[in-house]
Amino acid sequence: MSLLEVDIKSIWCYNIGTVNNTEQTMLEQILKQRFAEKPTQEQREIRMYGCTVAEMREAVEESLTYRFSGAAMYVISMLSDAQEMTAHDTGGHIDLMVIEDQRQLLNRAKWILSNYCQQEKE
Image (cartoon, rainbow, N blue to C red; front, side, top):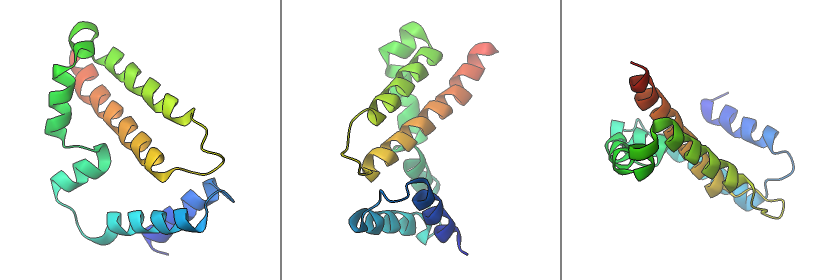
């Protein structure tokens, strides 16, 4: 079984009965693109975070929340945003774009924790 098949099956098992044919096709296309070719570092960063690390670093360091409250408060704000994204009713259907946005947002929050909160301790 390929990595693609494992990934698709894990998502379907999590969402049994809630993925319609259109969403299934979209999901397959997203995953096929993700595993189609060996991506460059920049492509990996964009797939993982929704932007490059350089863009993320710039956004964090220019943020007023980060400047006045620190990295931890910035991450708390991001986690609240991710939580709020789950609160919207989609009528029982999975919005794959929202799931992808949440995944990238959580990855950005983890990156900030690992790169900025560790620095604050030292």
